Length: 263
Image (tube, rainbow, N blue to C red; front, top):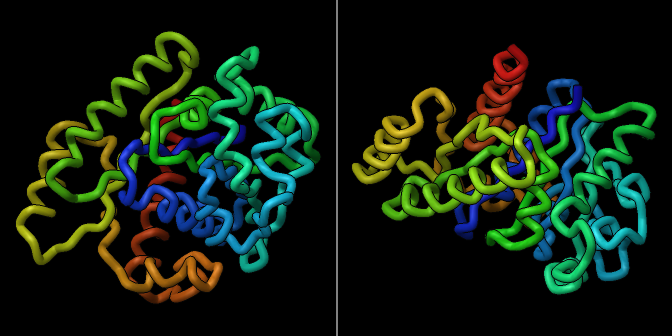
């Protein structure tokens, strides 16, 4: 059974795309077949995974508008065997407006995923959906298309405020559009162990959400920030760095969650 996981947070700069690509890369390195679908017009996930996303490249835009099936836009990532990506181009910026009046607008991605999984020869074990930092139609398609939500939270003062808003949206999607949706994991990112604030935020999140918060925290790391400029994830750019080690540990926790979710 393919696990379809949306990584979402309406706040920008919380490590959402970074977490998507590095967890996906770490799981692929562990021997699983993994697909990342880039739903963010900025295309940062596509950049980090080293796939072509220049204007005119077949992308998630054509998938959402129904011009191409998902299988026709998927590219193999050059650095890691078993890792694939459906890139985003700048065309995706117009999809929010174009889809407003479209029939079944919230289900476009879900329909494309169902078609792909029904016809592909070797389905991936994981599909990660990287959403833009907003609660618009692209993120809504991500939430309707997935069974699980992974929420990255930056260890800063406003984190909980943004999280509560996002959880309300998840509850609304669950109630009206996708009853199978669950928040399976919360990941603490950009953790600076030298500050009291970071540990206070981490403690507060754990107090509110308990076992759903992954044990692993992702530290602030220059290597994590540098990696995309070389069209790489940190797990290939500097495998021994603290960021790479932490993302591999988080990936193992997400793998372990699969057996818990199926019981």
